[in-house]
Amino acid sequence: MTKYFKLALQIFLSYCLIILQFTFISSAGVPFNLINLPLILLILVVILGRKDYYLYFAFLIGFIFDIFSFNIFSIYIISFFSTAIASRYLQLSFFTNRSIYSFIVITAFATVIFNFSYQIIDSIFSIYQNANSFIIAQVWFWRALSYKLIFHSIIMALLFYVVKFTSRRLRPYLLERK
Amino acid sequence: MQKTFNKKKIYFILALFILLVFLHYLNALKPIEKTIIGGINKGGEVFYNLGSNWKPSFKGSQEERNLKENNENLQIQVNELLAEKAKWQEVERENDKLRNYLNFFEDNEYNKVMARVVASDNLLSQNANQSNIYLNKGSEDGLREGMAVINEEGILVGKILSLHDNSAQVCLSINEDCKFAARFSEQSEAQGVVQGSLGLTISMNLIPQEYDINIGDLVVSSGLEKNIPPGLIIGEVSSVSKQSNDIWQEAIIEPLYNLNKIDFLAVLTL
Image 1 (spheres, chains in turn blue, red):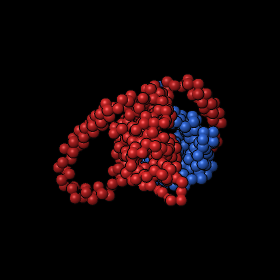
Image 2 (image 1 turned 120 degrees about the vertical axis):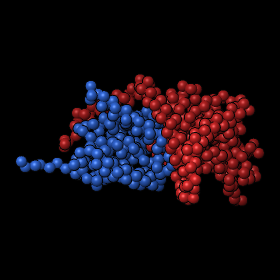
Image 3 (image 1 turned 180 degrees about the vertical axis):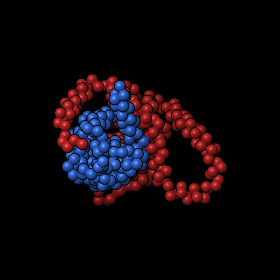
Image 4 (image 1 turned 60 degrees about the horizontal axis):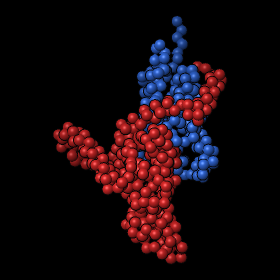
């Protein structure tokens, strides 16, 4: 029972975060409206979450994003899901120590992967809908991406210290000889 | 920590994904989708204004800091009163806005649906020049694609781009993908198409040289579009580009609404 209650609570909190993203952050001025809080939380779940929880979390936030957005359904599920898997791969293969540098580098990679996968899928679907030019080739995309990298890295660095001082998950494991 | 991916779970989620896509397009997920969008709409009613209030306060932060230094002592004394006043001002502002809508609709016989802005673009469309906003009313409330969206002064803010049952996407007139059939209010025969420019202003191209366009001229909807009545103000001319060797001239139009102050809007259902 506690397990299901915990799951329901986590889903509800994720939903609240997405509401905050859509309503509060989206209406804030440029460049603050470029911050993607659910993506940052997803990376945190990828690094610190238990087992394969990040897969379900990526799916859930992608699903809610897809429902509210007017883009082709599935674009956000695919983007968040591919970002989660790529981030996990990076973490397991290259950034295994849970240092602040690993957190920031994984966040930066995840931000790039998310934006690229979103834009590529969007461009593919736009071909059939009176498309604009290829968006990745435009200046504003790179400018927005730079802002996102800066903001996401700063927020992740702050979250790293919050987790470090409030949880045991980042403490090193030491074997004691008795 | 596990060192490999759990392929079974990934396959399970992929299967779930395919199932959801099917169910979505079969409209079987409608009740869930409506509930989720309803929740976001409710959140938007609370948080959207907070976010947009944050925007101008950031822009003017330097100015505010200087003022704050000078008035610090006085402000401590009046803080409580200001908080009270701000609360009433918000109520008064909303009342004024709704009264203006009432006056506008008494003067013009339009049917309208009032809607609240609950979100604007950032993640939902990542193109900087596509300024879209999202309303808490949708096709269930009688909205249709292409309908005009106006503010309390009757100024054309945008038009409905696409719809869900209980939400709508509105492209603003400054959006590059948003086009309106328009004319000059003084010279009704000078017609053309206006289009957003750089997410900031509106431009009107292909105006024949024979028309004398002046700065300050009003541009209104021409009524040639199906769901947009004629005579709705789009903006006023801020500059004219006219070369004697060209066939056409171009006008840059300043929209007459403040993007930071858009919270209630009316959709003309005609």
